[in-house]
Length: 278
Image (cartoon, rainbow, N blue to C red; front, side):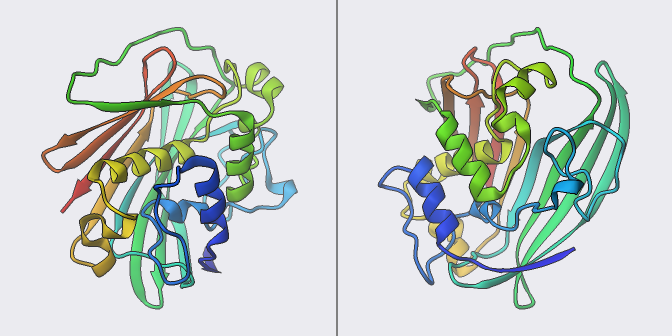
Protein backbone atom coordinates (compact mmCIF):
# COMPACT_ATOMS: atom_id res chain seq x y z
CA UNK A 1 0.00 0.00 0.00
CA UNK A 2 1.30 3.46 -0.90
CA UNK A 3 0.39 6.92 0.39
CA UNK A 4 1.66 10.38 -0.46
CA UNK A 5 1.53 13.33 1.91
CA UNK A 6 3.15 16.70 2.39
CA UNK A 7 4.49 17.15 5.91
CA UNK A 8 2.37 20.03 7.10
CA UNK A 9 3.36 21.63 10.39
CA UNK A 10 -0.25 21.41 11.68
CA UNK A 11 -0.20 17.85 13.19
CA UNK A 12 3.18 18.55 14.83
CA UNK A 13 1.98 21.90 16.20
CA UNK A 14 -1.10 20.25 17.68
CA UNK A 15 0.97 17.47 19.23
CA UNK A 16 3.46 19.94 20.68
CA UNK A 17 0.70 22.09 22.17
CA UNK A 18 -0.69 19.06 24.04
CA UNK A 19 2.45 17.17 25.07
CA UNK A 20 5.60 19.32 24.74
CA UNK A 21 6.61 22.27 26.89
CA UNK A 22 7.90 25.59 25.55
CA UNK A 23 11.48 24.32 25.27
CA UNK A 24 10.56 21.74 22.64
CA UNK A 25 11.80 21.61 19.05
CA UNK A 26 11.13 24.37 16.54
CA UNK A 27 8.40 23.73 13.99
CA UNK A 28 8.24 25.36 10.58
CA UNK A 29 8.75 25.06 6.84
CA UNK A 30 12.11 23.50 6.01
CA UNK A 31 12.97 22.57 9.60
CA UNK A 32 13.61 18.90 10.51
CA UNK A 33 10.69 16.86 11.73
CA UNK A 34 11.58 15.55 15.21
CA UNK A 35 12.52 11.90 15.08
CA UNK A 36 9.51 9.72 15.83
CA UNK A 37 7.00 12.40 14.90
CA UNK A 38 6.44 10.76 11.52
CA UNK A 39 3.93 8.72 13.54
CA UNK A 40 1.62 11.75 13.42
CA UNK A 41 1.26 11.30 9.67
CA UNK A 42 -0.15 8.54 7.41
CA UNK A 43 -2.83 7.19 9.81
CA UNK A 44 -4.75 3.96 9.24
CA UNK A 45 -7.72 5.89 7.85
CA UNK A 46 -10.11 3.10 6.80
CA UNK A 47 -13.82 3.32 6.15
CA UNK A 48 -16.33 2.76 8.93
CA UNK A 49 -17.38 -0.59 7.48
CA UNK A 50 -13.77 -1.83 7.76
CA UNK A 51 -13.58 -1.28 11.54
CA UNK A 52 -13.89 -3.94 14.23
CA UNK A 53 -16.39 -3.50 17.03
CA UNK A 54 -13.49 -2.17 19.15
CA UNK A 55 -12.77 0.56 16.58
CA UNK A 56 -9.48 -0.86 15.30
CA UNK A 57 -9.05 -1.58 11.56
CA UNK A 58 -10.23 -5.05 10.56
CA UNK A 59 -9.20 -4.50 6.94
CA UNK A 60 -6.33 -2.03 6.69
CA UNK A 61 -5.23 -2.96 3.18
CA UNK A 62 -1.98 -4.44 4.49
CA UNK A 63 -2.68 -7.36 6.83
CA UNK A 64 -5.13 -10.20 6.21
CA UNK A 65 -8.11 -10.74 8.48
CA UNK A 66 -7.42 -13.13 11.37
CA UNK A 67 -10.92 -13.53 12.81
CA UNK A 68 -9.86 -12.08 16.17
CA UNK A 69 -11.99 -9.52 18.09
CA UNK A 70 -9.12 -7.44 19.54
CA UNK A 71 -6.11 -5.67 18.00
CA UNK A 72 -3.43 -3.99 20.13
CA UNK A 73 -0.19 -2.14 19.45
CA UNK A 74 2.76 -4.05 20.94
CA UNK A 75 5.79 -2.02 19.88
CA UNK A 76 7.81 -0.59 17.03
CA UNK A 77 11.38 -0.70 15.71
CA UNK A 78 12.42 2.41 13.79
CA UNK A 79 15.58 3.23 11.87
CA UNK A 80 16.15 6.86 10.94
CA UNK A 81 18.33 7.03 7.83
CA UNK A 82 17.95 10.79 7.41
CA UNK A 83 15.70 13.56 8.70
CA UNK A 84 12.35 14.37 7.20
CA UNK A 85 11.58 18.08 6.92
CA UNK A 86 8.40 20.08 7.22
CA UNK A 87 7.08 20.88 3.76
CA UNK A 88 8.63 17.84 2.09
CA UNK A 89 6.45 15.55 0.00
CA UNK A 90 6.82 12.09 1.50
CA UNK A 91 5.76 8.70 0.17
CA UNK A 92 4.95 5.95 2.64
CA UNK A 93 4.99 2.35 1.46
CA UNK A 94 3.45 -0.23 3.79
CA UNK A 95 3.50 -4.01 3.49
CA UNK A 96 2.95 -7.04 5.71
CA UNK A 97 5.97 -8.43 7.53
CA UNK A 98 6.33 -11.48 9.75
CA UNK A 99 3.08 -13.11 10.92
CA UNK A 100 3.21 -15.66 13.75
CA UNK A 101 0.38 -17.50 15.48
CA UNK A 102 0.77 -18.79 19.03
CA UNK A 103 -1.33 -20.27 21.82
CA UNK A 104 -0.94 -18.65 25.24
CA UNK A 105 -2.70 -18.46 28.59
CA UNK A 106 -5.09 -15.91 27.09
CA UNK A 107 -5.90 -18.21 24.15
CA UNK A 108 -5.01 -17.80 20.51
CA UNK A 109 -2.60 -14.96 19.67
CA UNK A 110 -1.50 -13.65 16.28
CA UNK A 111 1.60 -11.45 16.12
CA UNK A 112 1.75 -9.44 12.90
CA UNK A 113 4.26 -6.86 11.67
CA UNK A 114 3.66 -3.98 9.29
CA UNK A 115 6.77 -2.65 7.55
CA UNK A 116 6.48 1.05 6.76
CA UNK A 117 9.07 2.90 4.68
CA UNK A 118 9.15 6.66 4.20
CA UNK A 119 10.74 8.07 1.03
CA UNK A 120 11.58 11.58 -0.15
CA UNK A 121 11.81 11.14 -3.89
CA UNK A 122 13.70 7.87 -4.25
CA UNK A 123 15.68 8.32 -1.02
CA UNK A 124 14.73 6.14 1.95
CA UNK A 125 14.44 8.32 5.06
CA UNK A 126 12.78 6.13 7.71
CA UNK A 127 12.09 2.41 8.11
CA UNK A 128 9.67 1.40 10.84
CA UNK A 129 8.36 -2.06 11.74
CA UNK A 130 5.05 -1.77 13.59
CA UNK A 131 4.23 -4.77 15.84
CA UNK A 132 0.56 -5.62 16.41
CA UNK A 133 -0.98 -8.47 18.37
CA UNK A 134 -4.46 -9.86 17.68
CA UNK A 135 -6.23 -11.44 20.64
CA UNK A 136 -9.33 -13.25 21.77
CA UNK A 137 -11.72 -11.81 24.36
CA UNK A 138 -9.93 -10.20 27.30
CA UNK A 139 -9.24 -11.69 30.71
CA UNK A 140 -8.39 -9.52 33.73
CA UNK A 141 -4.73 -9.23 34.77
CA UNK A 142 -3.82 -9.71 38.43
CA UNK A 143 0.00 -9.60 38.86
CA UNK A 144 1.96 -6.56 40.04
CA UNK A 145 5.73 -6.46 39.45
CA UNK A 146 7.40 -3.24 40.54
CA UNK A 147 10.31 -2.00 38.45
CA UNK A 148 13.49 -1.17 40.32
CA UNK A 149 15.28 2.06 39.39
CA UNK A 150 18.69 3.06 40.71
CA UNK A 151 20.06 6.56 41.35
CA UNK A 152 21.41 6.77 37.77
CA UNK A 153 17.89 7.21 36.44
CA UNK A 154 16.50 10.66 35.71
CA UNK A 155 12.71 10.68 35.96
CA UNK A 156 9.63 12.86 35.84
CA UNK A 157 5.95 12.26 36.41
CA UNK A 158 2.99 13.24 34.26
CA UNK A 159 -0.72 12.51 34.16
CA UNK A 160 -2.65 12.48 30.89
CA UNK A 161 -6.34 13.35 30.87
CA UNK A 162 -9.16 12.61 28.42
CA UNK A 163 -8.65 15.90 26.54
CA UNK A 164 -5.10 14.94 25.64
CA UNK A 165 -6.08 11.42 24.61
CA UNK A 166 -8.82 12.89 22.42
CA UNK A 167 -6.31 15.25 20.82
CA UNK A 168 -3.91 12.41 19.98
CA UNK A 169 -6.75 10.26 18.61
CA UNK A 170 -7.86 13.17 16.44
CA UNK A 171 -4.35 13.96 15.14
CA UNK A 172 -3.64 10.32 14.23
CA UNK A 173 -7.22 9.37 13.25
CA UNK A 174 -7.17 6.56 15.82
CA UNK A 175 -10.67 5.13 16.24
CA UNK A 176 -9.86 2.37 18.76
CA UNK A 177 -12.52 2.59 21.47
CA UNK A 178 -10.15 1.77 24.34
CA UNK A 179 -8.87 5.35 24.09
CA UNK A 180 -12.21 7.16 24.56
CA UNK A 181 -15.02 4.74 25.46
CA UNK A 182 -14.74 4.01 29.19
CA UNK A 183 -17.61 1.53 29.22
CA UNK A 184 -16.08 -0.45 26.33
CA UNK A 185 -12.62 -0.42 27.91
CA UNK A 186 -13.93 -1.79 31.19
CA UNK A 187 -16.58 -4.22 29.94
CA UNK A 188 -15.04 -5.66 26.76
CA UNK A 189 -11.30 -5.19 27.32
CA UNK A 190 -11.38 -5.78 31.10
CA UNK A 191 -9.25 -2.69 31.61
CA UNK A 192 -9.37 -0.42 34.64
CA UNK A 193 -10.07 2.67 32.55
CA UNK A 194 -9.47 4.39 29.21
CA UNK A 195 -6.08 3.45 27.78
CA UNK A 196 -3.19 5.77 26.85
CA UNK A 197 -2.17 5.14 23.21
CA UNK A 198 0.92 2.98 22.69
CA UNK A 199 2.17 5.21 19.83
CA UNK A 200 1.77 8.24 22.11
CA UNK A 201 3.86 6.53 24.80
CA UNK A 202 6.50 5.80 22.13
CA UNK A 203 6.66 9.47 21.17
CA UNK A 204 6.84 10.63 24.79
CA UNK A 205 9.77 8.25 25.43
CA UNK A 206 11.57 9.47 22.29
CA UNK A 207 11.01 13.08 23.38
CA UNK A 208 12.50 12.19 26.76
CA UNK A 209 15.57 10.68 25.06
CA UNK A 210 16.06 13.90 23.09
CA UNK A 211 15.75 15.99 26.24
CA UNK A 212 18.35 13.78 27.88
CA UNK A 213 20.82 14.71 25.15
CA UNK A 214 20.17 18.41 25.73
CA UNK A 215 19.86 19.10 21.99
CA UNK A 216 17.87 21.86 20.35
CA UNK A 217 15.48 19.91 18.18
CA UNK A 218 15.46 16.30 17.10
CA UNK A 219 17.24 16.95 13.83
CA UNK A 220 20.55 17.50 15.62
CA UNK A 221 20.47 14.16 17.40
CA UNK A 222 23.28 11.89 16.25
CA UNK A 223 23.84 13.91 13.10
CA UNK A 224 20.43 12.97 11.70
CA UNK A 225 20.00 16.35 10.02
CA UNK A 226 23.12 15.97 7.89
CA UNK A 227 22.93 12.18 7.45
CA UNK A 228 26.15 11.70 9.43
CA UNK A 229 24.86 8.51 11.02
CA UNK A 230 21.85 6.26 11.53
CA UNK A 231 19.76 6.11 14.67
CA UNK A 232 17.46 3.35 15.84
CA UNK A 233 14.66 3.44 18.39
CA UNK A 234 13.30 0.12 19.67
CA UNK A 235 10.02 0.46 21.57
CA UNK A 236 8.09 -2.25 23.39
CA UNK A 237 4.76 -2.04 25.24
CA UNK A 238 4.19 -4.44 28.14
CA UNK A 239 1.33 -3.16 30.29
CA UNK A 240 -1.45 -0.59 29.94
CA UNK A 241 -1.15 3.03 31.02
CA UNK A 242 -4.41 4.67 32.04
CA UNK A 243 -5.97 8.09 31.80
CA UNK A 244 -5.88 10.31 34.91
CA UNK A 245 -3.23 8.15 36.64
CA UNK A 246 0.39 9.16 37.26
CA UNK A 247 2.94 7.90 34.74
CA UNK A 248 6.66 7.94 35.48
CA UNK A 249 8.97 8.47 32.51
CA UNK A 250 12.61 7.69 33.34
CA UNK A 251 15.84 7.66 31.36
CA UNK A 252 19.48 6.78 31.80
CA UNK A 253 22.55 6.73 29.60
CA UNK A 254 23.75 3.41 28.22
CA UNK A 255 26.86 2.33 26.34
CA UNK A 256 25.16 2.73 22.96
CA UNK A 257 22.74 5.57 23.64
CA UNK A 258 19.77 6.18 25.94
CA UNK A 259 17.42 3.79 27.74
CA UNK A 260 13.94 5.11 28.54
CA UNK A 261 11.01 3.50 30.35
CA UNK A 262 7.44 4.31 31.34
CA UNK A 263 6.08 3.01 34.65
CA UNK A 264 2.41 2.87 35.57
CA UNK A 265 0.92 4.18 38.80
CA UNK A 266 1.78 0.87 40.54
CA UNK A 267 5.46 1.23 39.65
CA UNK A 268 5.28 -1.58 37.06
CA UNK A 269 7.17 -1.44 33.77
CA UNK A 270 4.59 -0.46 31.15
CA UNK A 271 6.89 0.33 28.18
CA UNK A 272 10.56 0.60 27.30
CA UNK A 273 12.63 2.16 24.57
CA UNK A 274 16.26 1.90 23.52
CA UNK A 275 17.62 4.86 21.56
CA UNK A 276 20.73 3.55 19.81
CA UNK A 277 23.29 5.80 18.17
CA UNK A 278 25.57 4.33 15.50
